[in-house]
Amino acid sequence: MSLTSQTRAKLQGVSTATLCTALFKRGLRNQFIQDVRPLNPALPTMVGEAFTLRYIPAREDLNPITVFQDRSHPQRKAVETCPPGAVMVIDSRKDARAASAGGILVTRLMVRGVAGIVTDGGFRDSAEIADLAIPAYHHRPSAPTNLTLHQALDINVPIGCGDVAVWPGDVVVGDADGVVIIPAGIAEEIASEAVEMTVFEDFVTAMVLQGRPITGLYPPTDEQSRIDFTTWREQAGR
Image (tube, rainbow, N blue to C red; front, side, top):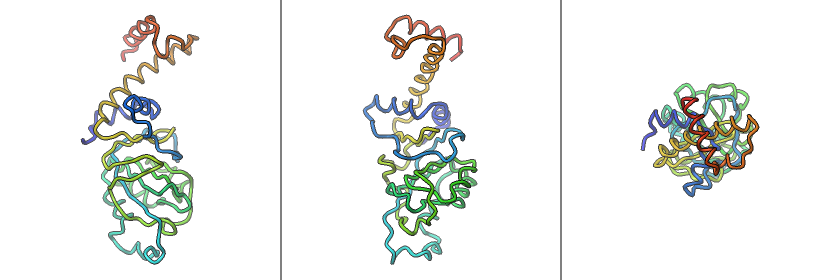
């Protein structure tokens, strides 16, 4: 199922925390990529379909720096073929001792219209990447070239990233908290539910700011809370 503009817009207006709760209601407990952080938390929410790149441990006789002269090198090819609007997700085996990519490659992804990049390893040139207008998520900065530890092998295959299984086409959402993976087949229903959850949570926040206790309000076990929510929603036009 292709990500529609309507679903993309819904997901851009909700948090990864709310999405994780909606996924948990469906029995999906392990969709939040572990130990990955945004280089620039102030950027808008990242949303796109996953386009994957898989690294394996490098073997020295097969991974000298001259491999980059090959125009079909998987890392370079991935940068040039990741579709606009997609999110590149890299399986770096949670190993940030060498970089997954650097500033030039991420800049190229930005210029091509890619929606973001995620690795469970690290980026070199991290300060440069943080200044780019493309969301980027990693474990920590890492200066050594990926070739010293990682060998790029596969493009757009199922991978593991930060202990989460990611299939090509899964929907990737990233905000200041981190990155969540939504199975493609339920992305629309999860997005719609998360929008409704967000409206209710905004109501709860407004009530708490007015001094109201959460008992009976969150969750709304008191009938008055449900009545008040309906009234508040009508007044707020939501």
